[in-house]
Image (cartoon, rainbow, N blue to C red):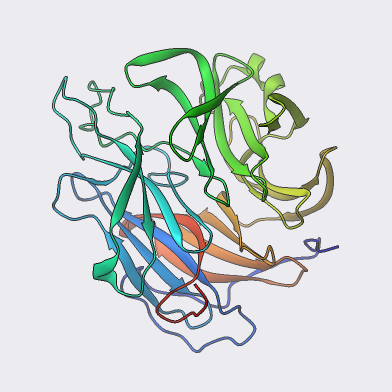
Length: 365
């Protein structure tokens, strides 16, 4: 069985520079010849500008695959919380999904937000976003941030057949209670998964490799000062069976991010350390279907995202320590963690999108 070692210790061995101006260090032969997709949002600009970049883990080099331009459509972001974190995803190592729309919308104007995909190509100029289906998001015309403060969390199944999108509204329609909309690749709604309470929210969600099951972490809305402790009993990790239309809680853990793996019957979650506190605790591996913890290790910093490589052999962890945003790398069979990327918060907001192949250097795509 491939498991995560309990004796892991975080050890930074590589320190890279800014996302678009990397400092190339000596290559480490023990690192995988894989790439990560990272997003950097420049919140100093209004509206913010997001850049997507491919990072080669072994060499430390990278290349830009997309940057918001001066046009009227861009990757949608929010300035609160984590910007594009969880609002840009990659599947199949070659297709990036994101919500795109106008940065600013006039009051009462028709909404044109859409889920879009970007297929990685060898040439930057050849890569263009393709709208998949509309997802109206620009209902909050009272937003003090000018309507670009609306990035939604979502997850796309590994085969691209299904999309899960937590929602409080569908366009102008406000839902009676929060839910997760399960959509087909055409945008047709297959199922609306109810959350276990009116004041609950989805912290993260992930599909099983066969797209039959959806794992999602639920927690009460608010922070340590405003959270309703009466809602804590419903928090935890849930599993939705899409075909059977059934949901059940498999763990009462309080978590803020998750990833499917390292085995096909396991889910990895980043746990919260205290009531209402986001991240900064241990990372646990839970077994399905009983939710039993099989491994646990400590993470340094406040963990905000987890992502396994397609072969489930490597785990990337995004964490924040002070004013530094860090990407750690673990091998699923154990060993030391390595710091493969670091960025000051003053340089922008970093988001771990996932793993990818680079058509400029890889073959077989």
